[in-house]
Amino acid sequence: MEEIAKAIFLGRFQPFHKGHFHTVEKFKDRFEQFQIVIGSSSKSRTDRNPLSLTERKKVIRSCHPSLEIAGLEDEDEGIKGHREWVNKLILKTEADKVITRNELVKEIIREYSEAEVVEHKLYRPEKFSGTNIREKIREGKPWKELVPGCCRKEIIELSDKI
Image (cartoon, rainbow, N blue to C red; front, side, top):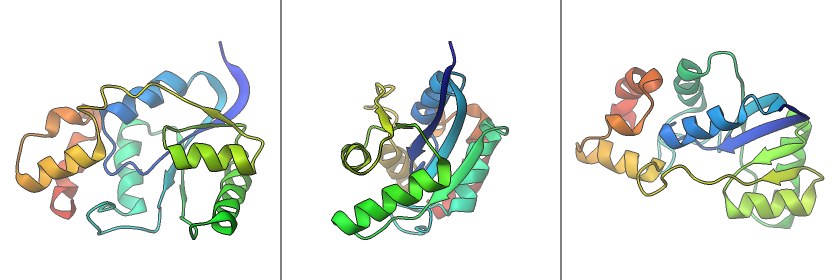
């Protein structure tokens, strides 16, 4: 049953993996509107954030070409920065619901907005984590089975940047 609401799934997607794919599939048809928001959008070419916003969008679009995807830059830490970040997020997306597992994000969404935090159970987090996949790619260990088939080619093409 579809909820009359606009929901966003917020993450860094460094890279997009089967856990993310599972969450999108679970929620994309549950709401009247559903959007993916890529956090830390201006960060790239670091160990933690190797892929650019454009690269992350390309990977996600290969699996979900019809979904709306937006980027959101980080703000400074602290109350002022957190409030500004939430204001930008809600203004940009007009979201009623924010799907996230990040504890800090949940806390500041609840503190500085009227949006509802939608918690979801992580899909096999011991296996599907961006950190785990990035480490495997860098170490030359098998990783391809950890990402959806629909975006595997794109991630292989970007693996030298990871």
